[in-house]
Length: 328
Image (spheres, helix red, strand yellow):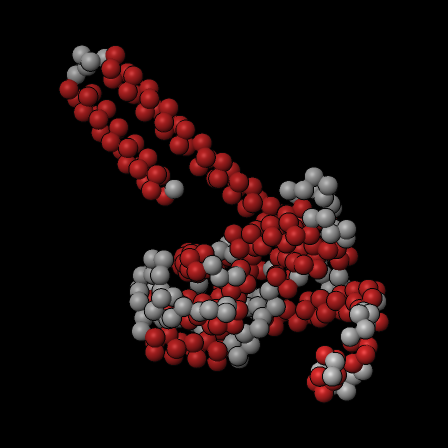
């Protein structure tokens, strides 16, 4: 009995000779049909994405200070630290923040010393990890990276149930990552830079997720803006007009994409300046210390007060250098 005959009972009524003939199915070669199906799916995501984000007035609550933007930023920063600690997928971190924002839009937390928001953050991260990660740490192990409060597992599970109820159990959210691959292919049809565009856009999206300003944009606009920002790093694509992104799929808003792109571009430039400053600071410290040592040896007859100030400054610089060495 041949191998194909042995499997004939498992082929759901299809002709086994067609499957084992080595020929590709006819539909798989129909690229135009595949592109149409994918584009219609993306258009469906754009139409439905409003059901998986907070209401339109959510950002205005932060502007009016009825919600604390700094507290949200701290919670998101903690989520990103845990994501990096355990190597969670970017989608896990984004879903955690999405659950948190949708909950805060619908429910007001008690105004206490911050533990309710910490509990909510742990519960949202736990739910997102269960949705996306093959291996999920225990609820106690999840509370790392400077968590101010440690909650018992039963307390977190009760909070998870509350979050699930508020979100109506809709955890499979539409996020910017639902669009980045499609938009990257639209921007780079040849596929030469698609992988880089998706990777770089993912970095940009996560690095800006703490900013409350992005809450007024839908996932599709954030994804399109991130792909456009990523294209700025590629000379062949850096001259792409952001206004053309509207043509990538039906339902996209040109004004929202351009506005989000400009905001994102400013934040990316600010982040690049901060990183370049951090690189220059260690060299500057070493130069200062070298000059101080040489001046100390040349002026041995200086007063005791100036020697004390010099030793104190040297000690401060030594502490900074030690911290830098430990971090490396």
